[in-house]
Image (cartoon, rainbow, N blue to C red; front, top):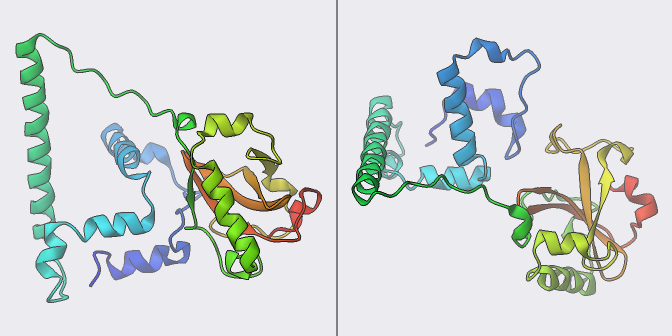
Length: 232
């Protein structure tokens, strides 16, 4: 059973768990102001999650749980009814907060934007592909050093890491344009630079950053900075 329609699945299945790139022919002016604001709000709330996290979230909601055992199609009116109810509950909660703040004479402060530089890096293997540069190709000693390199950085914030030596606990940038081999398809156009962490001397851990997450893409025991463009 799946919440997606077959036609929708076929249209986007090539992207796998990666981002869906906006088509060149897309015309933003075709959207109304309300539609555009809705899309922005959805992305603001759910854009931080991976594909599997979003999938797991849908499997915790009533429409899925009510039909999981039968493995049948979830009726559209049931989905609409569930989210209409959730929307009403959310509206009532906001009204309650507004009423309470008015009685107390206090203002509801807007949420401060998150400063991800003041958070420690979250090392993710979500984008790691099997092959020559997969961690599974490392020897036991290098795997241990790889794990130790992550452990030694767990108490540092991104801001502190930026101040560290690039061949120590710090990191360095390499441009996507410097890589001569084909770029993996999951690397979207908005990714202009890769980050390199070092482990066990000069051996690189290569990936890119999204918010406070370091999305690890590959390592090798022979790669050096002068030949980083051979990575992919």
